[in-house]
Length: 335
Image (cartoon, rainbow, N blue to C red):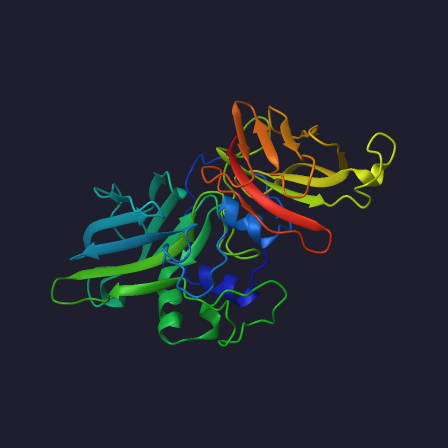
């Protein structure tokens, strides 16, 4: 994950937070370079026209709301693209500098600490710091700093796209808000704020906030994976398929897990009419991809007990037309 230095500093600024005890560490990994279509299939946000907490526009993001009332009554709730809100009340450490740990099915383990109180807040608790285990191994979001900078339209509140200068100009299309205040402190005594964070195994656009979900013993993350296929047209369709390699289709097939990591591939494989190309890797079963006789024929897929064609809605398939001697497409599958 590449992120601007000023943004990282802003997220961590003035955040004095104790790391939760006995939390598992996970191995850092580099994100594969994946075409936009396969990113969409396995859930990477590519819409950069909305705030991070808008999971309707960013279906791989989740909204986290934090609030206190009258200096106590700490509350959090998390809502992801499925629209199911999960509430977290009855905090055991709802006080200044108290570390509160939760485990949400949408974003994974997270913690919240209110780092200021009373005189620093006029009254009550304020300045929450939100940390997520799967984002940078308990990466800390300084909610107040991000909300203030967003309100002021400051450059430091924006994420830096890969390769951009530091800080990102406010005019950059990728410059978006991460947190906002939803209630500063009114007569009801409520302080509340909202942030957008990535769902487990997803990220906020390539090279931005990256959530690394846990992997199984085989070294990949399920339960949903993606397959990207490039099918190359026959260079000599009139030739004898038995003797002329140019009378056959050829394929590149790449497999990605729920974390968008490459977990298997074959490149330039000869795809004889009706004979499957086999792809192995970290998955427990072999992915079979079959080209047929003519260009108009559908590409066929089979994995474990699943089988489908290249336009299958249940497998979220999206295939393009031939262009420049090839066509590309993507499908998802249970893994």
